[in-house]
Image 1 (cartoon, rainbow, N blue to C red):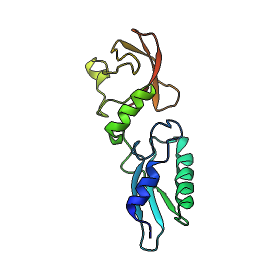
Image 2: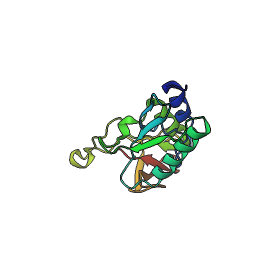
Image 3: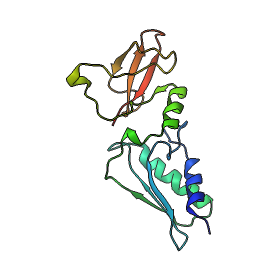
Length: 162
C-alpha cells in the first residue's frame, strides 16, 4: 500500500501551470494530502486567489499524476478557508521565483505602503537593484504586477502579496 510520503513526493513533482519552476506543493496550494485506509488518495488544495484559471489545471494534473502512480479514483477537494496567502510559499520557492526572473512576494501579506507612503521593498530579480517602479498593477497573470528596473531597464513580474 502506498503511504503519505509517496503521495507528497508525487505532488512535489507537479509543476504550477503558470510558473513551472515551482511545484504545487512549493506554491502552498496543497493544503493536505493523505492516503485513506482503503488506499484512496485525498488531496486538499486551495486556490491562490478567487477565479484563478490555473486551479482546474492543477486539479487535473494532480488527479492524473496520482492515477498514473497507482492511486485509483483519487479525491481532490477544494478548500477555501482559510484563504491562500503568499506566506505559504516556501523560502526555497521564493528563491526559485527570483532565479526564474519573478520578484518574490515580500515576507508578509500586510501591505501598508499606501498608508505609510513607504514603498514596498522589491528588488529586480536580474540585477538585484531596488531602484524599481511599477508599470502596471497586473503582469503576465492577475497574481503578478509588472515592474521595470531603472538600473538595468528590464521589465519583470512581481508576485503580489495576497
